[in-house]
Length: 132
Picture 1 (cartoon, one colour):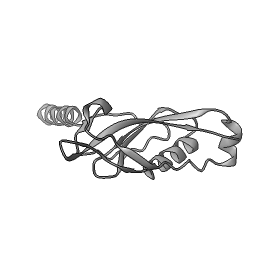
Picture 2 (cartoon, rainbow, N blue to C red):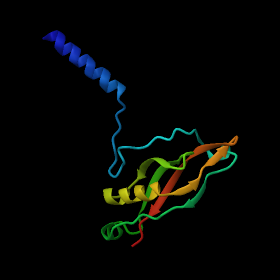
Picture 3 (cartoon, rainbow, N blue to C red):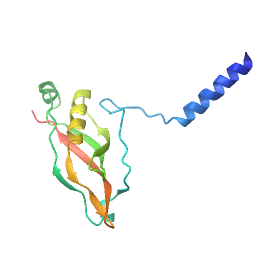
Picture 4 (cartoon, helix red, strand yellow):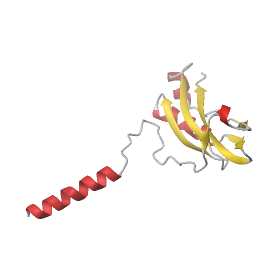
């Protein structure tokens, strides 16, 4: 019995130490996509990312009333694949408002930056203001 308990305990410890634990903030997407392209700072690239379309979130009437003149700050990676990935809420409001901001961020259209003729990724801070 003691041997089984020790074996189970050892397996649980090994499993937990191998699994990264991350707390999700309210409105945080638990399935954050990771970009496989290298991420560079603006000063390190030959051609910076060019944002073509940055849609505004479709906040609900309630969110606009409760959070008028407030803002949501996200961090995201504009991936060399052309997708917006690794979106995280840096400074948020309600779950519904954060979700709307994340949805809008996913819809950003851009031309990836380049370094040495290869597409690269750049990290970006996105701000969305709630207008009443």
